[in-house]
Image (cartoon, rainbow, N blue to C red):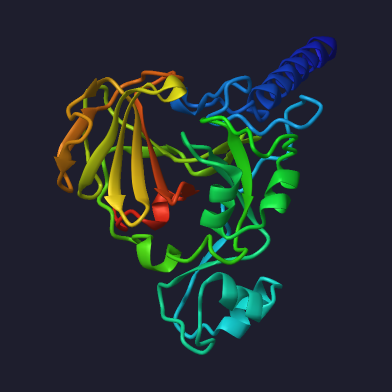
Length: 301
């Protein structure tokens, strides 16, 4: 009787131990699975980085310009202290004549950051340096340019932010909390670094064929296939502000057409480098990408 009871207890203990071990294995953290529209290929970034003189890819990924949105009660001195920058430099790069006059909601560029810029047809290093208020020799050295007089359209450059002229119109032209949402959906991938690459826009997952609307009135300056972006619409809103809508299945506008805020311009798709239906939205001011979230109205997508 005792031996039978002893064997039974041993069997129960063995089964319970095995069950506990199996439960622990199943409960262990598993690798997170990327959503369809978050998958990116490391060999095909949105923008290729500048090449070094040796021909190797520059591993330093350019950051987007650092910005600060003034809050109630802020002073320029306190902001400078908080970000460990010189107050006079902060005032100069934001074209502030009166150091004591900043207002709530104003956008300030922060020193010490860089941003990516894609060379346009007909541009020279001198014209780009003048546009952004940077030294031409410094720009050439930063980008490892052997021949500064020979630039190619589509070439990627790294621009130092805030050297004097590059941020002149940021506070006036960046539409904080003013743009309407282009599509109803959920944010699947935010603006910023993603798997070691810079993601220059905001991804909004939505149903295939769903209508995409202009976030603001303007003129269509590009409409068609655009490499990894797939079927793309770019709208110029004036004052250096442009918005880009990528991966569409169908385009509903034509180049040169004027559009109103909220007007249908495309339908959601998965063209270009994409593995699921979503809209990739970019907001650029003078060629510099900014986080669309600071420009979109504070409501649900």
